[in-house]
Image 1 (cartoon, helix red, strand yellow):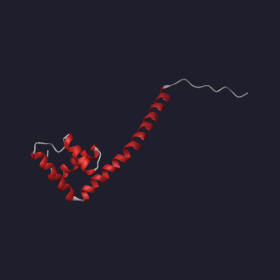
Image 2 (spheres, rainbow, N blue to C red):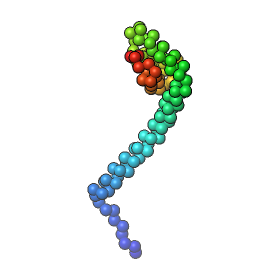
Image 3 (cartoon, helix red, strand yellow):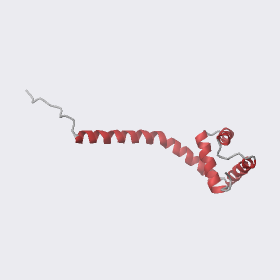
Image 4 (cartoon, rainbow, N blue to C red):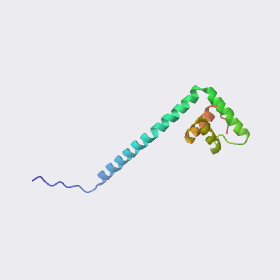
Length: 108
């Protein structure tokens, strides 16, 4: 008859291993979820780099908003940009911030 196999009681080493394994699993899941968003934002920003006329057009729109006392990064402005460019609100905010930072830093 084979010897009986016993489960060892939890130890600090087992607990530490489980915590690391859980952290690794969480990091893997977050990477899988975040990677497509990062690629989408990267493509969006690259399109502005390749098309300075688009950036200048956005700067002009932002200046017009500022002349009316509206911030280019206000919720209403971002919503308008998102709908006019078929973007998510997050992508529109990233786009506005990027364009303002690189092409029209005097815009608020």
